[in-house]
Length: 251
Image (tube, rainbow, N blue to C red; front, side, top):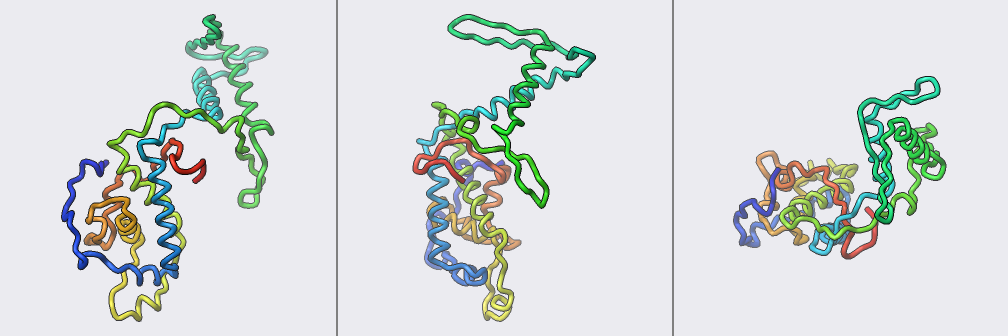
């Protein structure tokens, strides 16, 4: 993994000749230049809000905590046997209410608690039926009862902020560009070479929006790709469990 905060910065001072013109790249993808710019600014603003100093880490949602609880109880490998439930291994559940402990160590009782929570999470309160690829499928029903959480006092570590910020920018913009198709006639008939590499376009937009000030993001590598993929190596699928300092929930 590469941390942008620790990566050396090359050629900090960028001349006008070093700034690439990407207008033909956008035209090749059928993108309106102004609208695309506002999209990139919006994404930049969003990821800034997710990774800035004021973005506190979320605690797990109630659904996540209940799923984790069930998964832990399943490690007892509960198996029905006649009128009982056999379990393997030992476990102890301690509930402290107003300073008084209630301790459950019986495997069958713990298994029954796990079954109860599991069936609750599968119930109509928590699930709904949708058509997915033509088949009726049970999916999670979004619920403030289950999917809300309290914010912790922890914040995203500052040393990770730049790398994560670029990774999120890449994630969202690459999703937008994923199904964009190049106008081959325009590219083939243009007298000059038009860069159509999406990673290079995203890398350059990270620089143009001010998300990053490293001029390596402007230049293609030997394969014609952008530096951003190297910079976020290991963070491509990053998710950030924080609130957003500037916006409500979403994305």
